[in-house]
Amino acid sequence: MKDNLYIYIPTRGRLEKQATLKKIPEKWIPYTRLVVGEEEADSHIEKYGKELIMISPIEGLSAKRQWIMENAHSRYLLFLDDDLRFYTRNGNTSIASTEDDMNDLFNLIFYWISDLKYAHAGLSSKSHQFHYICETKEEQNPKNYIEIGKMWAAYGYNVDIFEKENIKFDRLPLMQDFDVTLSLLERGYPNRITYKYAHDQVGGSGSPGGCAFYRTNKLMKETAYKLEKLHPGVVDVVLKTSKTKWKGLSSNTRVDVNIHWKNAYRKKIGNISGFLK
Image 1 (spheres, one colour):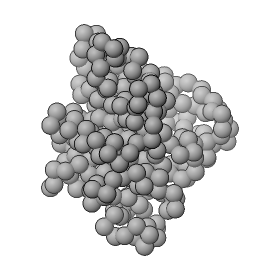
Image 2 (spheres, helix red, strand yellow; image 1 turned 30 degrees about the vertical axis):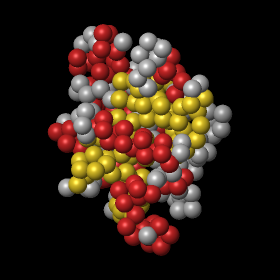
Image 3 (cartoon, rainbow, N blue to C red; image 1 turned 60 degrees about the horizontal axis):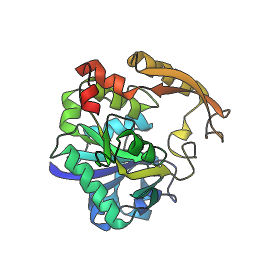
């Protein structure tokens, strides 16, 4: 099995809107796969070529991510949502990432999960990028990353550690990324998140495509309470309201979760106040 970083982009219903794929540098295309269901395989092969397509026999994002983990081309992989834009920090602002920035980002994630043996690592969302700068007191310790925090839409894994700890993506139909991150933190594996680079989603979290095909208010509620049960003392079920209604939901208000990421890590290693400074 090859030891390069492979990039997997699970996708559904976005044949003509592959925003993330457009940002993948040419040198990384041989290590990138659009992961599609069988019913969409022919159309994606016709448009993007056979070498770029990985056909999953399983639908549903949680189950598809688990299937990818079990059939990965490498021991190191990066999951990216299919609708992402990328940004690079430029002083106190963010600018669109260049091809060189994207190369540096992928090399950084690869270095963290391979050479440094982090079980999981990723990049900040754009909305959290400058919050993390304040959190790390960067003027005293300019690291451009934090340890122990929220990752979504863009994160990498060391597959050997993932398998050793018997982590599963398919325990929940939604919020599977939160469940996996918490499971690894609770087993004593801190994650590392760069805020030099960041992402957001074209159209926002509730845009059509992806899990919007099956996401409902009922499923959101059921998943939130299951996540709370799986991670007691770490997850709180709450009501949240968005400015716009998410695709598949009946209203702007939904049952969702607040997560105390550092509490999950404390479960394993006790008081880590010194480590987190």
